Length: 174
Image (cartoon, rainbow, N blue to C red; front, side, top):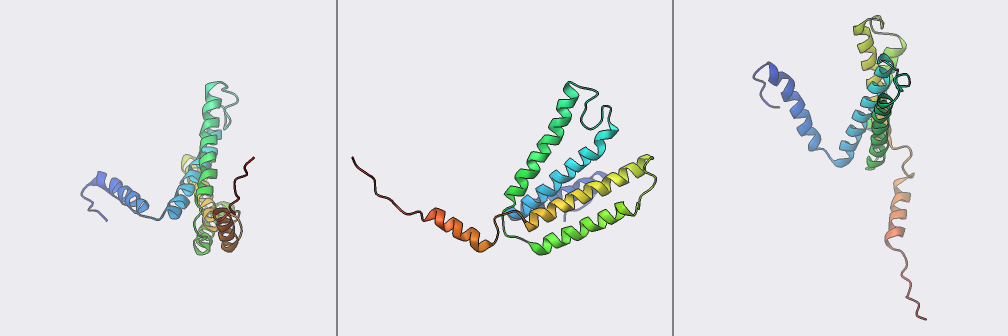
């Protein structure tokens, strides 16, 4: 951890330390983190969307606003799908269980309405943090567990070996 010397470094130093720590992780852990960040951005966009003029889909504004909103939803969604595909390292079921427990905690906070009145700004923002954190933890659990990634490790290795060791066929001459 770096030294904190002033009020501005109280904000910047922890962010820089987190970025340095992120860059020293193995690629599969980095992919899981990126999936979580993209899911959080997407959930925040979806949560805040109806608060803007024209709603989430920008239908009433039409024109440029609708395309901008769809790009704001479509690009993070594509990043999320590609990130889930890129997080193809070993399955980490312990980490997936931990992320799932955190998601259950955020869902319980939402279910039991442990936030101020959502009509006020603070309640609206706190509820938004709950929704964003729930989506982020669910995405990280999915990336760590990899439920849709080709079955067991033995079958994946066998497929890879079959691809690499394809039988050689002689060239036919006419």
